[in-house]
Amino acid sequence: MRLLTLIIALLLVAIQYPLWLGKGGWMRTWELERLLAAQHEVNAKLETRNIALDAEVRDLKSGTDAIEERARFELGMIREGEAFVQIVDASSANAQAPAPGAAATGSGATANAPAPAARPAAASQPRPSR
Image (cartoon, rainbow, N blue to C red; front, side, top):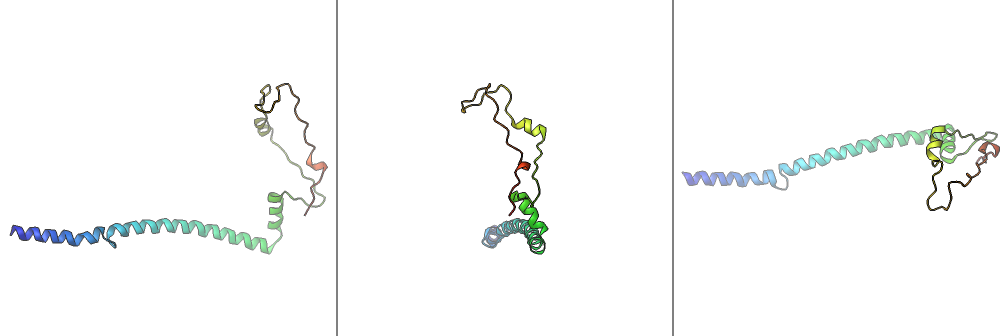
C-alpha cells in the first residue's frame, strides 16, 4: 500500500512538472502576460504620439498659421517690416554673468580687464525673411 501511494505521488509530480515549468506551463504564461502588458503600454504611448503627429500634419497642410509659427520659433524668421526685440530678464542675466572680481580660468583675462562691448540691438538690423 505504501509503495502504491509513493508511485501515485511520483506520477502526480511528473504530470505537474510540464504544467508549471514546461514550455507552455504557467510560469511561461505569466511571463508572456507580463511582456504583453508592457507592450500594451508602449503601444498606447506610441498611439498618443501618432495622434499628435497626425494633428500636426493636418494643421501644416491646411493653413499657414502653423507654418508661420514654426518658422518664427524654430528658424527665428520674422515678417517683412517687423523688428526683432529680445527681452532679457535681469535675474537670468545676473545668474549667467561671472561674479565681479573673479578671474576667468584658462582665458588669460584678469579681473581688471574691461568687459566686452555689448552687441548692437537686433532691432537696428532686421533679419531677412525667407
